[in-house]
Length: 202
Image (tube, rainbow, N blue to C red; front, top):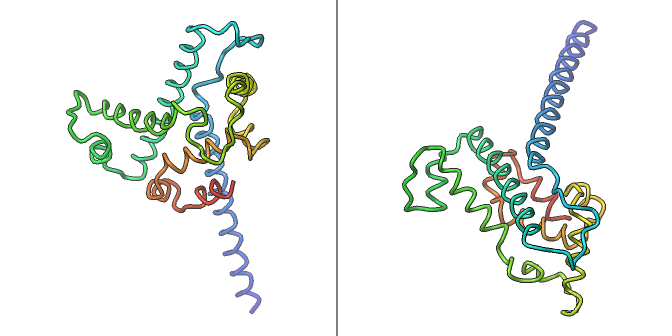
């Protein structure tokens, strides 16, 4: 009986070691993914930015930062698709069916197009068509949106959302995640829908 218990104990210790190693590997992967997601860096804008001093150069700076962020996200998404064994040709064709790509790597433009289309859906509306968000009065909208922009321009999105989970930005991110990441994609990448449940619950 003692030998049997010792054998079971060694087996459990072996399982614990295996699970620890697996957890450490998952943590390493998570840190790597977070680093890659943050590759676009911070938006560099002067701290003393005034609404009256805005000019086209400021818009171009934000646009370039947005473009880098989308490209970084798409690279990560394509890497995850490859790891999960996706057929990238079929995935690109499901986005844009009648395009012939000059080089195989040019398929990334189909994915960039998809991500941009989803992220900018509702851009022409003051609240990005997030129905539950109440808008400030029309005469104060520019000031409110500019104040939000200056508050967030140097913040990390994840930290901001953690601090203010009910903010309009958190609602925006929640809606865009659910719109952009299909449940099948999430299951394929992560093995389950727990991220979606977490996002849905706020």
